[in-house]
Length: 454
Image (cartoon, rainbow, N blue to C red; front, side):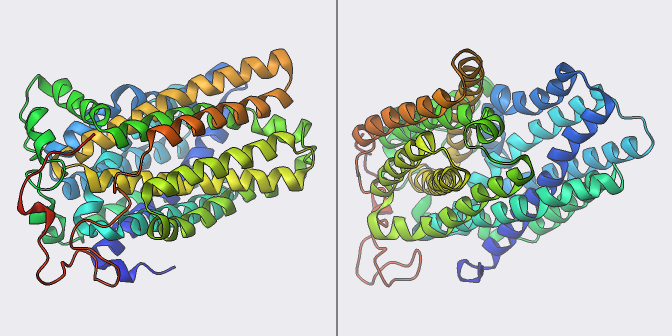
């Protein structure tokens, strides 16, 4: 798939993201495999997993603060450089037989902490290198690229490399981080600055930006300290009808999907009767579904608008989850699960584009971080509930419960996610016009501040 039409800066950012995702897909299963070779105590193995999950949940808001304070392009490069050093050190410890469970947990935690800053910076940087009308397409292509790199290349390759030498996946991961840092630094600095029509004091959000504390310029006013700045992102999400609805819908859908994912292996083997040898093929359907969703996201947004497309995606996922809950055959279950995965990718692409178009540049890091933290908070709750329910009532009811929860989320989202023009190009962007180029004689919305209606 080509990314040329979106420009050289986007192409470099896309390549860096795909490169980093490839390394992640190599390292994550390698960490689990290495932990299993060091101990058979499930509690110790779980510590490594939890160590990589807690930092984004506990400190994710801080990543958004510093993404808004610092130069985002440089921050991403420094973070990837630091991650390359951490993983290279881990590879050396593994190769010399000095890595223990504590070492793996510390590395997983540090990498996850650095990842929160990288993710917040990347989310906020994209609108600076891509015109507003192309954000849905740009996010979808990022999703497609990372899906292919992680699911089709990295994950299958990780086991092969680990079998050859335990340190090999980590060594290659360090190289991917180093290459990603170089690619980010190659993005021209001039393409990473806010455009006049996207400044915090212009457009639909100008009045709200001044009202909530005035750090929309990204200077980091320090009002209330670091946590005060982080709270501004939370307040913005909660004060904007569209963003609030998206955050609540994401949290609810994560509750259902994370619960199902937590018991998916057992569900596939016992309820769908997937042969153990074919589970890898069954799982590949999720990756294919995600890729199809990434290819469709931009087209759906252009055809129907962002909010109508998001509501339709939730409805489609509800039907797919219902079909999955009713399925008792590997083929029908796999197809239904692929449909859920496709919807998830479309949702992530359009959700990101909506926020990137409706939030001032100086708040993007904090707002994106706040939305991610809200979604992450629901995931472990769903996983824990599914585990207890599966033990008490069996696995089949877990699929039915996931579909029921998702149906409730969909009904609520159809009320919350009203079409407020979020899916239409900003004033001056019409069909047939180059991204971000105003029509002659048309007045840009940014010519005068106006209060956003919520």
